[in-house]
Picture (cartoon, rainbow, N blue to C red):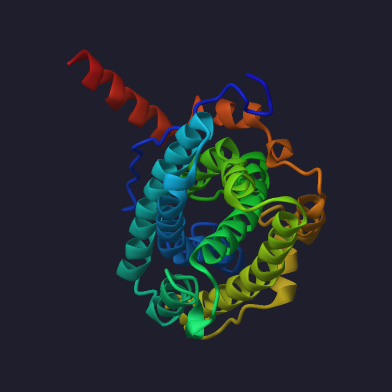
Length: 303
């Protein structure tokens, strides 16, 4: 297995998780770290449905057979991610954590602001609007690849006694983010125009994505902490608590996240350099959910 993933097929896994025993604070005594990571479950159901929708728009324009295969694999993986994170969202609701006040804004962002037509009737041609949205997806996928590799390598979560089911979900998702780390970028490069204009759109995609993701994440964490029924208003999200969790290895460092931006903006950059495919494959071999999904496929094939 080469670490750049060139010889690896991107395919969705029909995993499932049992949330019945997962506590609200699934990192013990760490509500801030728990809820910073829980923002994933608020953003991803709508966000990854949007990824699939935009890629469906661009699919007829793909001329490279290998890229077309990868794009279809990417879409299958992202659709599965959306479903599995929706189940966690439902689990949070059973624990009386209300997320609707936040997720309605997430839905608005992806359905209206980044929807089929430019917002406010902006005079942007259909192909240019598609290219801009593909550049945003490529930028988002830069961060998800970094986060995916971080959660696979993180020992702090294990030391803290984090819930095993939640860790398996996050790491299975991390594996697939590392697997398809280059697909959105390759799709953008393939259909994002030519020359300086294509690079300018890539820069614009990151210029929009980085601050919006930071804002949405901080807002989401603050909402989750504020509405947490077990905290009952005794705690607020704070940068100090966040940084303490970082020092414990429960969250990625600001340097790990921030350095992803200048790497992405290099003209020679390609995401195949992000993360470790070897580490991803090694985790798949011991992931309870991935192993169960592979076993079910094997039994179905025999039958």
